[in-house]
Image 1 (spheres, rainbow, N blue to C red):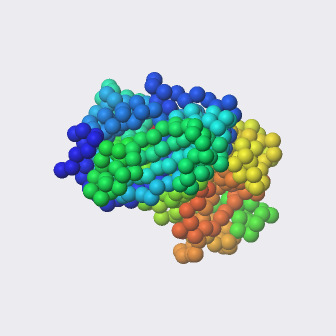
Image 2 (cartoon, one colour; image 1 turned 90 degrees about the vertical axis):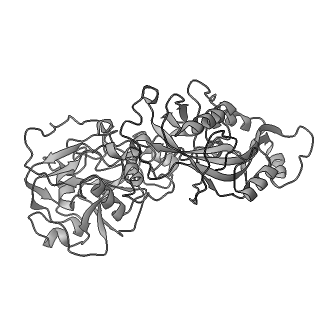
Length: 514
């Protein structure tokens, strides 16, 4: 057994790949709140953190992480409002779990940060405190080297009441991994920062201001050789956080569902594109469907249980992004969508079920009704806010929904199910055939028996044209396509016909009660 400067902490070598820290910013609630910059970043168009870094964090926060990691899994309370991200370490919350040490030395990384968003993306926790340095010195240099990480085992199986203790109340995340290594941050003019990053000395004494410096190269060289953390190369550099709802598999909540009664509805649209015409009366047996899209936190429970593959990563993917636990999971392909529904004891809806639920009893063309353009508060589409992050998009002029990309699944509600015209498009079970609406059966259609593509239904946050937001729109996509625009909601066949327990129109429960 190897011990390190985290006294009493067990370091057990494992071989698991490291994730790269992304963007974000933190303060510690009750300990440190970063001052706002005089010229701040565009928070509405900022994606937000996934694995937030600790380069700008106060030493007290890193020390608290060390202390808590010696006792067990580190539980935190996280809040985000725009660029104001706060984390509180719940030091009285004791969660029985052991971090295992993973050795994976990384090459030294060097960055010159000259814009507010570059600060937020590179120096996550408390990084707003560095933004004012851009006004006078002009640039921040960051040099870091990673040795490895402490990781909780996955799947993490905790007792049902693991977070029920008094000191754990309000916990939103567990720290699933703590990256270790060394770093140095300094400020100066851009030419001076570039000189040092290139390995040259400053042009004059005092040309650079050291902001923070922890560890030494020789310590990391020895630590890598001895395959263990050593003082000088064991500083917490970044955190990977796991939503609490993704840790306790035994109590993973089931999404609230809406009961859709047996009966017929008018599917498709006359005079529209070939693949959605003609309008036909279609009979569908009773079914239940999720009122809301599956959230990133709900999907995380499936990944933690080992029943789902992790979503793809990339810009505006929601999995693991702090503050987006209640946003729809996206960046998943058809097999991941189906696996989650099976994990939840459900299935993918058929295309006919999806359209019947989305169009509501009145047969509306859009989730908000039949008028164009959408009224204020109608949903999450390509709007004026999105244009700041995606200036090349076609957008709905004059419309603003408050979100550049995805929105919380309950941010906009509909008469039956929520956000079918926007937010994310959704995988269904049917193969795609552009003749199917004309030649398919009119009783419980389930799609062609085989095909090249699967159907994706609904609009998404990148859609800004009338036709893109219609509830009759159909798209065929490769089963392996995982896009930031694609998510899922699930369905199931009821064991008995729906009765008086159906949710009345307009009484949408919050996903927090799932």
